[in-house]
Image 1 (cartoon, rainbow, N blue to C red):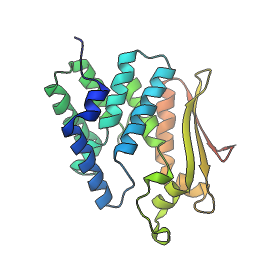
Image 2 (cartoon, one colour; image 1 turned 90 degrees about the horizontal axis):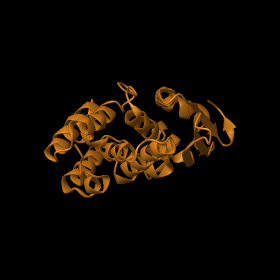
Image 3 (tube, rainbow, N blue to C red; image 1 turned 45 degrees about the vertical axis):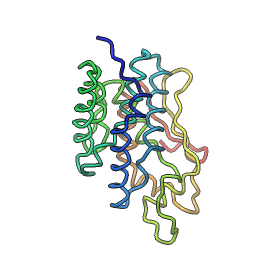
Image 4 (cartoon, helix red, strand yellow; image 1 turned 90 degrees about the vertical axis):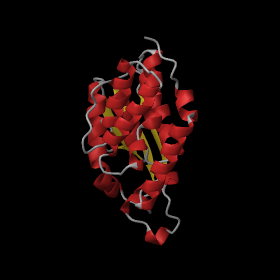
Length: 222
């Protein structure tokens, strides 16, 4: 059964837009970095880039973009278990739009498996979503405007002046390239808060039969 539910429809749907806005408000209230449109649109783009580079069908790429845009809506309920609650919210939304069950399953599995506490790369879309979400580290995600009151998460994100995830030409590895201002945060602090995420990225890469590498300021560290 063909589906007419597209990424462009989802990203313009008034209910979805409200879910994303309100979910980000929850994150702001508890002191987390930006989880609004800049984040979900980047995750959508990188998820789809990964699958497109690896030669997956166009519709699979489209489903990854949809999953990326919806992946954090569960934060509107609570940060705890937000992957699972977000998957249920996405199911209700997509079922009402009469999306075929196989496509719904792909999207809600990816959403339900993106948080590092419970995540598992169960299929290509979930693996791509993990890689895209966990590598979105950048200065512009920091909400705190007072440098002297930065916590470790603020420092690490603010220290990252550039980040880019790429697929090698021979399709054997993913590489996360980071430029970090070590006057603001050390490499050690990056791994102190992101080690679980990086190990999850390694598992996601292994799903594709690939390796995961990190370069910081031009030097390989993983």
